[in-house]
Length: 185
Image 1 (cartoon, rainbow, N blue to C red):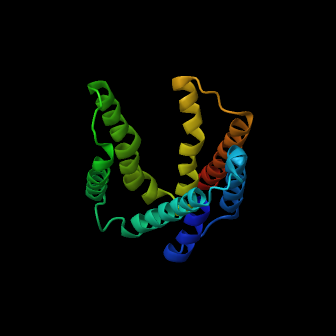
Image 2 (image 1 turned 135 degrees about the vertical axis):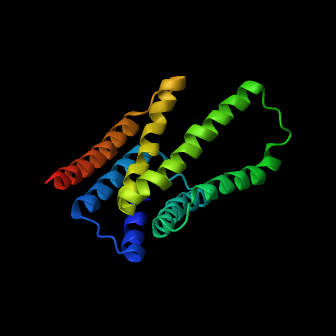
């Protein structure tokens, strides 16, 4: 996603991507590769194509949001998109048998995993960061996902997941640390 966002931001927004960010994108890509090397070569072409389409779509979304910033309030579009997704998914949930406790968990996920991050992306991150930087920061979800599962249910991540995650975190920290230092000068 960071690579797609950097290219799209350059092509459609005219954003300059510093060398440090290209290096961070390469390092983060290597870290993600280390995290998922066990899953590579499984022969699942449809899944791999979907996995390739998702970062392209996310980059296109981020660039479109950045282009319209200030002219259109996109938070109502987030609500409409969530409602539409729920309506489209509803038939696949039948027969509906979630317990009240499950519904509370689903509501919490809807608010804290989807709605709040999307609003923060639209209102805070995209106006202040380049498309490439937003793409890099979005990798935190991939890195922190196994960590949260480990904390919640005790599923210990493999050594390659930990090593790859540390590479991604280092790339993000170094890139943003250098940007912050340059900004302070």
